[in-house]
Amino acid sequence: MPLAVRSVTEDEVAFFQENGWVHLPGLLPAGDAARLREIATVRLDSRERERRSAVDRAFGQSRDIAESDPLFRELALSPVLGRSAARLLHGVAEVRVQVTNLLVKEPDGGHGPTVFHQDFPWMPMDRSAMLTFWLALADVPAAMGSLRFRTGSHRHGLLGRSFVRDGDDQPSQHPWLTDLPLSDPLDLAAGDATVHHALTVHGSGENRRDTRRLSFTATYFDADALYTGAPYGQTDGLGLTVNRPFDHPKFPKVGT
Image (cartoon, rainbow, N blue to C red; front, top):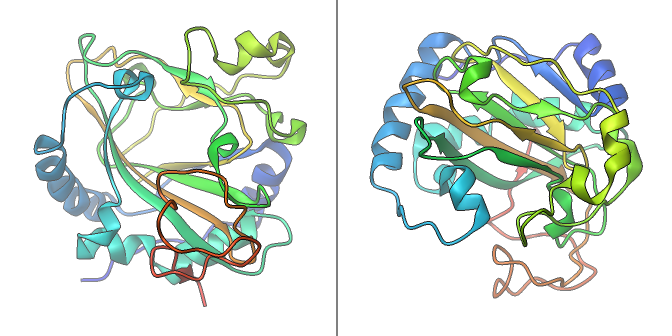
């Protein structure tokens, strides 16, 4: 049975473009989220658990899930989701998948807070038209560490990398960010999502409940973006050509 992904509304598009993030209640029905959760639980239970980096201390992950699992691939390549991503990104006609990911934040100190950061400073694309859908696979009350956003921060350009040294979260680097509104804590039901721009400063608290936080992310970027050649683990060794589009099976176009 196909996944029943809904389209974003005009109001949601307007909110996203103004604020750099938006809450999407019921992006998927709860039953579809349950189907995905069953697969995610098995995959996350078998993941590598060694914590080598600051990212690993904030949450666990299983990357590129859509490349190996057909149901997650159906979701990532959903024409509805692709068209929604293009509508949210102002002036973008078509998008490509950048990466898909399963995320888990363990309770009871298993993982700490996710520092406030931007996603884009690492990327080898020549433009920042990129966003991430963050889908709750089970209920994620705010106390579990649902994402929060510095509203309007996407308008301030690249602000530097985080997760590379102690104290390098965005508000520490740029104290003026605390003058921007911080989004209210969100209680997400299974199938709800948030979307944030790759320049939007975002983070989360630790999981203060007794069950783990489970989510799926799919990141999309402008299909016309050109490869800069900047070192990046996902693209190194793929044979991409500098100043050419990302024409590679790893970055399929979505929404056509």
